[in-house]
Image 1 (tube, one colour):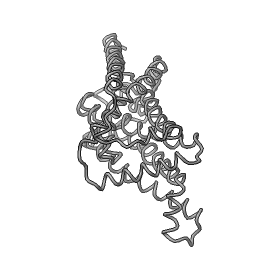
Image 2 (spheres, helix red, strand yellow; image 1 turned 90 degrees about the vertical axis):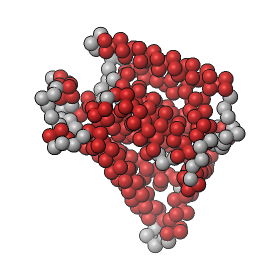
Image 3 (cartoon, one colour; image 1 turned 120 degrees about the vertical axis):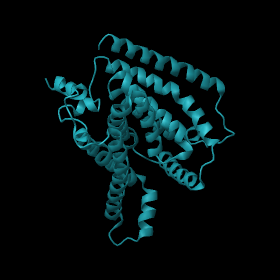
Length: 313
């Protein structure tokens, strides 16, 4: 009964959300919320990390000592980052969605539903994410050809150096996978593929929603020297969410992508952290093979979705 009510609230023109009743565009509210959620995330992450630093270093520690403690112990940053994502990107988005839909239809609005074929498509998604990695590498190489302000380059290099030092050192792998893989996969997907994509879809249609939500996802990471591959992954996750009619495969894809990076950085750091420059172009045979498999799986998923839609599923 609740599922039927939820479906009617999404498709029935008689039902009007808070946004519609008060004259707000769905896409405008979503864009506003991305900015607010990002600020809340940064503030929460900083506050939690600061509290943990004070507890560990002592209340009489100087700012220099706390900064040193933070750079030497990235676990504190990871905990703060995860807390910020869970509270600001995940839970806060969950409540903010009520401006667009009823309480009963919130799960369906965010596509937090499991279809009969969700498990099968999630497995295929894993294959897709593994297959697309050489293409992502190629896109990173293309991005390296584009000059970006030195400030952004230095900031990203600093972040990567800290992460490399952490993964090369002693760390509990399962906790790292939780902070880098599980939390972003659930929280970022809730925000971008759950809420933002649906809001833009209601305003502009599905294809603009896939493209714009992917671009916003790339910009969210504030890595201009890595914007093209990040935006591409964002669009792919959005496409997966649409064709599978569920956010679960996108969460799986996000986790496999991030978790794979953690495993590579832990066991093969020389390859994982090799500097990407205009001179380090990936092998064309690997990129071609990657594109072939990726295009085939994407095309198969698209046709499968079209068949399902035409059959009235």
